[in-house]
Image (cartoon, rainbow, N blue to C red; front, top):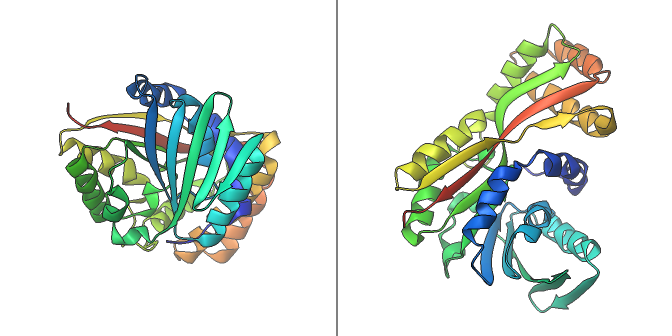
Length: 280
């Protein structure tokens, strides 16, 4: 999988937290409301932001396995999780954290998800989760992933999957061509075969419904304003670079668009959250 820096993940975390759909997050939490203990596998965990967004919605005792291919991000996750809480203990294979009345035990696993996740499902967790992951994987990988979870009747909750929608203010004449080129780049191979890109949630819905799951989706767009200037600038630079790499627009056009976006007052970047629950 193409890598992301810990700095980029830290920059986007506040926007991710605001964007996450609260109704769907609440529906996920309700599924475990009568549980005292829950075990969660977090795929492509990065620096641990998904755990930080979910922990206070889950039962009092939580066992997490954070999984990423990049050992540097796993190290960043350890550091940021310790900084996040008042009480922490370093364990032989992870961390123990206290957040109010909740107690979390966290293990860290370096794994190449392109090989599938079957080894991460033994023993089967109560929930598999991920954030900003599934637009990077292929439709074939999604089908195999859904089959693996269905074999163990494991629910999925995922947030912030890119859906191909972008609106910048004020508008610019190159917005359309740049977006088309960027979305084409999103469909290129990120280590799993041709990526599902903006159609990832559509693929997830079909794959899990084929196994009898009940699937709900909800919008979780980034709504960025002047307070997000650093994020907007970095985001625009990445979009311009990726769009130019496709050859659908020239490097000069990408630069013109980037300069205009550095003056943007606002941006909406579309995402979708998804909750898939197995048949009873």
